[in-house]
Image (cartoon, rainbow, N blue to C red; front, side, top):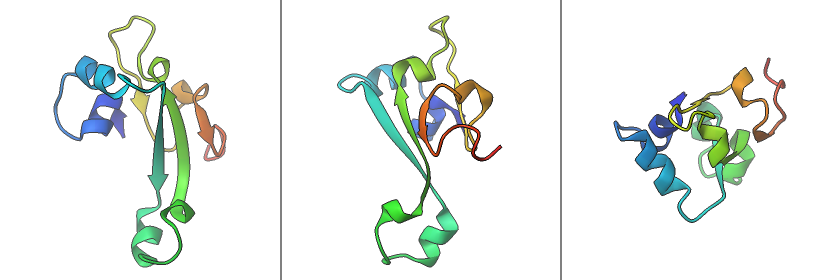
Length: 95
C-alpha cells in the first residue's frame, strides 16, 4: 500500500504535515480495507461493513518510527512491522 502519508492523501504531500494533521484532534484512526470486487458485485446489498476484510486502529506511534522522521509502511496483508497494531482479524491471519 505504501507509506502512511501516501495511503491517507493519495498524492505527494509532506509526510510530517499529513501525520500531524490526521492526528490533530484524534488519538486513533480507523482504516478499513474492503474487498473491492465483492463490494462492487453487491453494491446496494447489505451494509458496507459486510465487505470489510481488515480493520486497523492506528495511533500516531503506529505510523512513525522511533527516530520520529521515518514513516512505517501500511500494507495488506499486514507486514511484520505492523504486528503490534490493533487490528481485526489479528496479525498473522493472512500469512
